[in-house]
Length: 395
Image: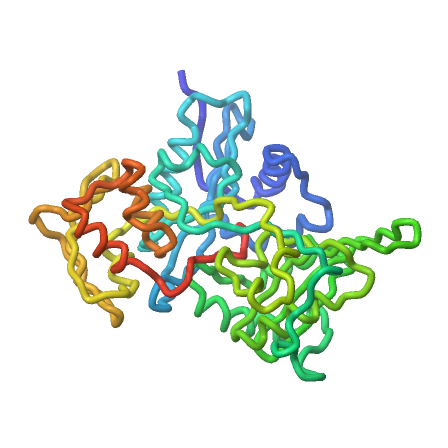
């Protein structure tokens, strides 16, 4: 008999949830972060599973916004804190939890569900597709610098701290113009600040900011300090170049590493004097999307060409056939019965939604069907976005 109870989390569950999360992901929460973690969670959106009183699984969602092609910010449920005890695997717990989390997202009329995955082989079966990627880089600071014509004037960049009240405003301006970026709440900013700990340096421009930490390595009199870039947020190309000039000017530094501060299609290689000093050491999946309400989500974005396509999507529990009449100004999306131009499952739709994956790429992989090659050519152009999607905030 199944003795597992799944219910909405309460305040009495939180301390145990924190311990369980730390054990599940191999990174126990330090005492100084526990109090800061609680305000980031709306417990009404989190679930606990208990077996005879013992906590054996958790899952929940943040209330978030994601920027989509055209610049609209669309409400989304950010699925998070998903963990199942190793003693309770292969019992359908994850499926039950994900179903309940999705029901919560649907009740709140959030058309998009999204997540960042700890493992790459779990979430496609729940309808998620990889919509954006993160680029891991390493730069040999001693070999390159920003080209003279892109360097800022004296005073354009100032050193500050993470407490600078201008930073959240700058980030909000930035995320509203970058496809795939999500909002950062004050509570999550406070948690991130504490997580980074002491020793974070911050440089601010009127249209951007950068933050980093330096680890010393005197290297027997040949300094090769390591700089880890946390954020480089730039609203304008001038701010982007100015902040990189500052980062590349930090004394004693040899290697600079970063996980999310450099976009896949970043212009950094074109503003420095030695592109080869910038190495991409890894490319990982970042933002996974599941369009819970495909009609609303597809109507929220704009399209690069003036066209009309009928898309059939297998959502698992149902199939929807939608006609998208779209152009650079917006779209009208409605249910139809006419023959589809494109057929796909929910994961494929999530992958192409932000414009970072071409329908033709999925078609070549056998993951998307098209009426003919002309439809694929039109679909590629139709769904294309100005830049590749990027998400620099983990959750």
